[in-house]
Structure formats: C-alpha cells, structure tokens
Image 1: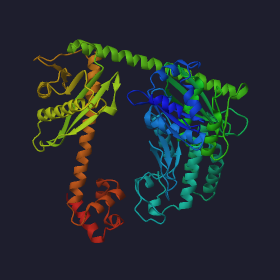
Image 2 (image 1 turned 180 degrees about the vertical axis):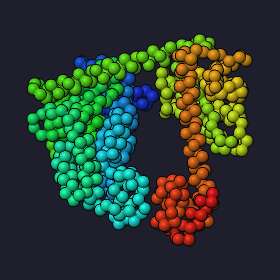
Image 3 (image 1 turned 90 degrees about the vertical axis):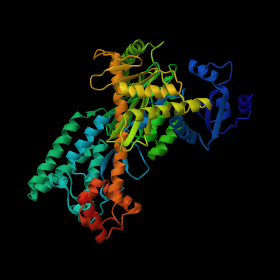
Image 4 (image 1 turned 120 degrees about the vertical axis):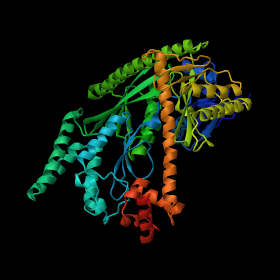
Length: 612
C-alpha cells in the first residue's frame, strides 16, 4: 500500500529513483527526465519488459526518489549512487576503486610523477584510470629513466640550498632541492612529461632535437648524448603507434562483449590520428542486460573518473538516451562531445576491432574463472571429506597470531567465501594482557572467544548483517595441536558447533579435533592448497597489523623521549621528513628547517637519535 501511494504521488520533475527490496536494500538506481512516467512504466502490466526488469520488479517492495534540477544532474547523481551502493540490478564496474592513475603534481613548485589509487580535486594532473598495474609501474620507471624527475617527498621551493641526494649524482634528478635548476627549466621538462603521458610524442620530438643540437653547439656533449638517448627511446615508441585516421582528431573507440553476468568493454585511445593505447574493463550485469545499457553505464562510470575526454566517442550500438550523456561529457571536457555509431569505413573497422578484442578477452577471462571455480569446488569437496562435513564448506575463517617477544600481540581473522578471499570481512584483534609474556595459546583462545562471542550477541540482537553475525562452515587455526586445543576449548565454552582444524607450517600437517596424529595430504591436493592459501593470507594480515603497531611504538618511543618535542613538533617532524629514519639521517641544519625547531632543539634531537 505504501509503495502504491508513492507511485500515485510521484512528481514529474527530473531525478533519480532508488528501488528497494523487502530487506530495505537498494537493488536498482535509475535516472529519469520525468520521474512519474519513468517509474510507473515498470509496473504497467501490459508493458513488454525484458526478463531482467520482470525479475527486478518482483523484488521491489519500496522506492525512494531524489528530485534534481536537470537530467544531467540526475545522471551525475545516479552514477555516484551506483558507486556507493553497488545495486544488484545495475551494470557496474568490477573493482573500480582499485584502478590506478599516474599523477603529475603540477600544483607543486617542482612537480613529481606518482602512482596513486584515488583521484583527488587537488589541482594535480591525472592520467588514467589504467587496469594493468604492472604496466603502469613500467611506464613510471620508463618515465623516470627518460626524464630526471625528482622522486623525494620534500617540500621544495625555488632557491632551496639543501644537499643533493644520490639521484642527482647519477643523473636521475636535476637537483631542485640544491637550487641547481630553475623553476622555469624544470617546468619545461614537466611539460614534456605531460606530452608523453598524453601520447603526443610527435610534438615532443622536435623540441628535444633542438635541445640536443643546442647542447652539442655549447660542447655539452654529455647532455646532448642524454637527450639523444631520450629521442631514440621515444622514436621507438612512436614506431609502435599505428596511424589509424588521416586527420588529427582525438577519439575513443568502444567495443563490448557479454557472457552471463559478466561484460568486458575494450576502449581504444586515438590521439591526433594515432592509436596510442587501449584498456579493458570488466562490468557486472544481469544475463539479460541490453547492449546499449551496458555501454551507457560504462561510459558514465568510466568518464566520471577519466583524466581526459576526447571530442568524439564511437560505440557499436546506438545508445537509448545519448543527449544527457553528451551534455554531461561536454561539461566535463569544456566543449562539445559527440557520441557516434559509425556504419562503415575506417571508424567502423576500429569499432569492430574493439569488439573482437573484447570478445577475445572475455573468452580468456571466462575460461580462467571457470577453472578457478572448478578448483575451488574440488578443494571444498576435499575438505568436506577430511572433516566429515555434510556439504562442501562455503565459508572458511582462519586465525593467526603475531608478536615479537611478547610485544604488540595481535590476531588476524581472514575469510574465504564462495571460492575467493572476502577482504571486507577480515578482522584484527589486539591482544592485551600478554605484553612481555608471550603465550600463543592464550592469545588464540582470546581471539576465538572475542570473535564468536560478538557474533552470538549480534545474532541475539537480530543484527543479521552485523560484522560478526555470519558464522563459518569451517575454522582454520594457524599452528599445531596446542593452538587447536586452545581454540576448541574457547569454542566449546561458547557452546558453538563448528568444526575446527589446524595447519602446522613446517611439514604442512593437518590436526583434527579428537585425533592425536596429524593428517598428511599430498602436496598437490586441492584441499591442502586451499588451506595453505587461506593460512598464508591470515599470516600476511596478522604480520601487517603487527608491523604497523610496532612502527607506531618505535616512532613514539624515539621521539617522545626527547625533551622539548611534544605532539605538535613530533607531527611536524614526521610530516616534513616522512619517517623516523629520515629524521635520524637529517643534519642539524635540515632539522632547523622544520617550523618551531631551534638550533638548540635540533642539536638535542640529533644527539638523542644518534645515541639511541
């Protein structure tokens, strides 16, 4: 009745609507030029809806809407809400938060080039997003070999007179920290870096040749040779860039393929008539999703974070609502953007090539995913037989303990679910009361007790979606018979009926409850390989947390013991140098560069850190 009332009073404004199921979860987010007409159309019995819409409507129990001033604003809001809520029936990029960018810090006096995971509104130039992290790292290394860009974290202003580091002496930096290069000269190099990242290498080469000849005429042969090497490296890249268009325009060509609930979009980047690169992205969608909706959703999500938008974007299918998307892209670019679907000629060939690449990539990924799924099924069956479970385990949790001679004792909890690690459910525990007297058995018992006691409390309070409410089918303990006994004792005190087993690291022996002798599985057993994978992840997660705590303790103890260094000066020192190690390596003159550090205090800090 409440849903029908909302349908009756829907406004005719543009906006965004959010469909919810009985549990209150958002299952679909959409935009509309006219909210009343669009939302009501889902519930018209005579409408020829797709199978996806029919299934979705059967799960709708409630809806909300947000009115916007225009359809373009609705598009932007829709995109943000899809990213935030990841609704079941929307097309969405897989793992879009992990795509890296290359960042040029042009807002700094002497910019750097960094690999980052987030695009901020900080005045820097961003390039990406990219899907291949390894390729991005190779590009960054290539850039740093090609151009002497500074890589330090110092806040350098023009006229600085620091001592240059090793990078300057090996030709990997121009030495702005020592005042060895002007802001203008360094800025010209950054302009060349940006041209390189934009793929406009042809524009870069003439200026470099001119610099090489000028250096040669001044008898600066070493500098001329370095520029010659730059030119040769860039020319080899230009040779790999294929001319695909007779004109000098910037265009993106998009192709896609779909298999079940997975889609792959391939995008070719053409700049000034040359194909300079390509990227592919995976999207989650329903099996009945229409091609135009897949493409439209991808374009919205990709260009919202893209570092550059070309004048023309070519797609294999006509989009259902291209006008608001074109208007939005035009606002992002600063002038008009055209969404086009070529029917013949060179442009159609490029779109078809993108489609072919998308299909090939999706075939490869689907085969790999199918293999992983079968391997996970075999491993789960092995563990079902090993522990005598009624069915293969769908969720496995693993505990590990980490400490250093009893200090900073921590426990990790990692989760494997439905064939893969589920990092959102990872938890970590700081074990208190055992400092100085290491006891892995007590630490393990405390971690198990805290995890399952919290879970029982959430279940009793009706928090079905709480952090600890989901219980596993099997628990893995990192260790031997002693750790397993301590964990089982903690479990039994809570009256929980979940099977536990332990995996000892040296000989990969498996200990089971009620058996004195360990079980030795073949080294290539799928069950053992899965246990080792989960155990190693628990070990990594615990060790990372322990190192973090240990680092905090070390930083605190070294700086807090220095007279005159309070919390503010400690923060200023760490912010300026980046780490205690760098503070220790700094000279007294460098320490005085930090605001509030006098010559006397700098001498005290220097002596204390060097005597510690």
